[in-house]
Amino acid sequence: MSWNYRVMRHKAGQLEENPDLKWDEYLAIHEVYYDKKGNPDSITKEPIKVVGDDGEDAFSSIKWILKEMTKALDKPILDYDTLKEIEKNEYL
Image (cartoon, rainbow, N blue to C red; front, top):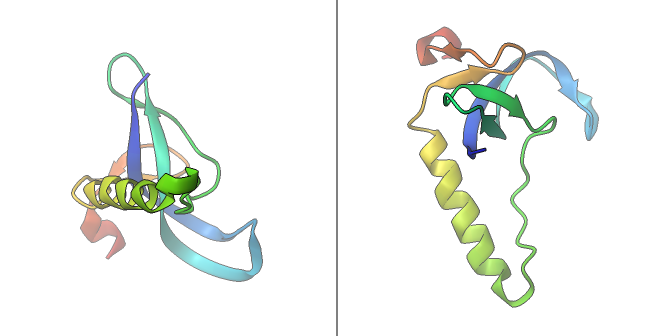
């Protein structure tokens, strides 16, 4: 199973980690996992936090995560609920 980071559009709601913040829509980066045909199959429930958790290599870990997240900005946005691609102009 392959995966990468993708920008996801969330509709009205709130983040579990900060219930005081509410939006009509917002974008967040998630890990997206793909089926054998390369279609989005599942995602992380919560947006990804950038945390260097590799001890002495924590800085390198953060650098790698940010580099991979940057690649997500060149891909179409996915809808959180349907995993379907949306046009960036539908959001922006």
